[in-house]
Image 1 (cartoon, rainbow, N blue to C red):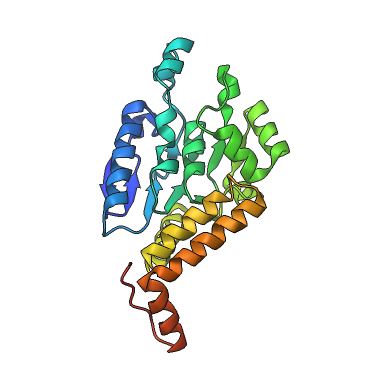
Image 2 (spheres, one colour; image 1 turned 90 degrees about the horizontal axis):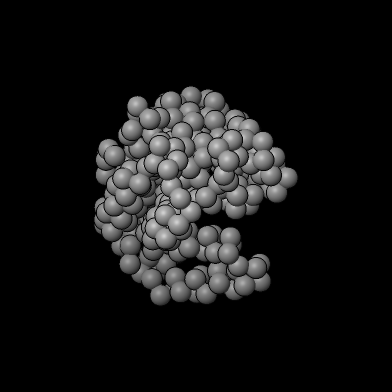
Length: 251
């Protein structure tokens, strides 16, 4: 794991195309936790190399497991920590392969950017298993049941162009350089706003994945009301009325 600029996390296991192993996930969760608690970080970028975001789970680690071992140790449950414990926005910048666990990890992030030549997929069927870190659930929510079923049952891949067109990715960039530039630009834009509002916005949007529409709208309204207790709400609206740039206190 390589830490860059206090903002970016780079998966760094090049010989294995960033295959996700338990030690790597442990390092990732530890680094994400540190960034989440840092006052100097508002947005986190998660990326890999130009060749591979993460080519999947480490097959050598999984192959000898028995049912009882996988079940009693809650194998790969820790992979989902970033969806439950990280409150700050995470942007996935995907270039090259994002297969199996790599695709699942990218989908756990809040915004997914990719290159046009990126390669997404859930090919677990070829190994005699199914996705185990949320792939069948998040992919279906992102692109619909029929498309997700086709990809998961056939093990076929999805290009970055199609990922953007189908709603899996927010945007596909023509090159790796453009991807990283665009990702950083979005991160800087988000980081320029009130941290209080940023966290509230992420929380409200994520609730849309868990709640029925009526309950979700009610939840959103409660969070909206709560922000009128923040200093930044007063600062933001006052600055808008005065046509000035707000100076956030993040309180």
